[in-house]
Image (tube, rainbow, N blue to C red; front, side, top):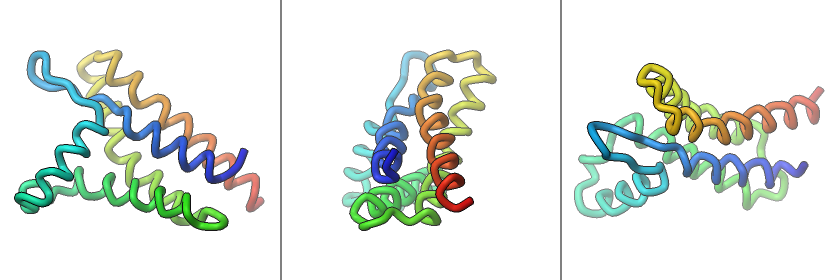
Length: 125
């Protein structure tokens, strides 16, 4: 499988992490990112938090690897770890609250990450 397809899969899978809080409030990460982009132009200070900035920049890094001739292994791994921080947090919260939807929403990203690590390990071993 091509590294670009793997990186595209990582980006796509990261957009569908599910956040649920207090009652019936829930949003997918792509919805949260859209709100962050809207607030960034109005009040940048309100969105400056490590749990928003790190995954957002990590997605930007993965998008950058898509336009590279050969996607950088280092940048891909940095992107996986950056987004992985948020996904592991969502997974942990889902496990603690026994929220199957939150747990299931992280699995595609986790699986794509495993595929990416195996792909790059195979290329450089």
